[in-house]
Structure formats: structure tokens, C-alpha cells
Image (cartoon, rainbow, N blue to C red; front, side, top):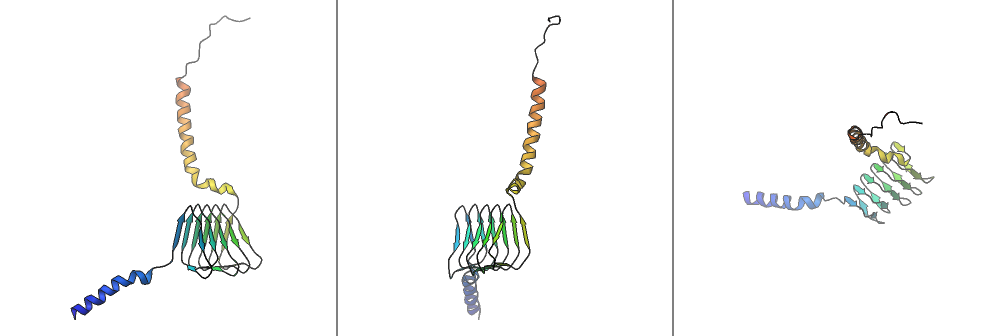
Length: 163
């Protein structure tokens, strides 16, 4: 009985990772393309773009890139984009929420977003993550300016010189 239990446990531990394996995709610097007839779960991309010509079953997150969905295809989850655009072609569907910061949502007339849509257009939002760094650099510049200002000795001109 114990040998049978150990064999079943071994099979369970060996084949469980393959049964749970999902087609999550992630990339840094190179574009991700989900081709026709293919399905992907969650997609994460930094400094690249996502082209969906198949279906995305999970969420899509893009940093400094854009998301393009081909006609009649969909994204089942949420879409989050920082520094890029969302392009939905005819009859493309986003099943969840859409959040775009420093970009635009370009929707065809028959494209649909089922969840909430939050778009903060304008590229000035790209400076927001760097605000603490700018403040830190400004404080250092102020300290260096105040220290150097007091160290410089201005020349003394003698009195009585004049016209």
C-alpha cells in the first residue's frame, strides 16, 4: 500500500507543474506578439510593445510601450499602460478595466471596453516617478550653492578711489 501511495505522490509531484503551466509572457526590450490561433495568459512588457492577433486570457501590463489588438480579438483581463497607447481595432474587446498614464486610448467605432476606463493623456506624466529624484537633486544643489557662496572672498577695493 505504501509503494502505491509513494508512486501516486511521485506522479502527482512530477506532472503537476506541467498541468499548471500557463502561457505567461514577459519581455524587456523586445516586442511580444500573440499570433492568430494562439492564446496567452498574463503579459508583462517593459520598453516594448504588445501585438495581440490571438487572444489574451489574463492581464496585460506595459511600461513605455503600446498595446495593439487586432480586429475581432480580445483581452479578457485588465490592461495597464504607462507611457504608451492602447489601439483597439474593429470589434476588439477588453473584458476588464483599462488604466493608461501618459498615453491615449485609440478605439475603433466598434471596439468595446467592458470595465472602467482611466486615461491620463499627455507625456508630462512621465516625469511623475522621477519627482523624488528631482527634489533630491535640488536639495543637493542648494547645499552646494550655499557652501560655495560663503567660501568665495570678494576683492576689497580701497576707499577714496573715484572720479
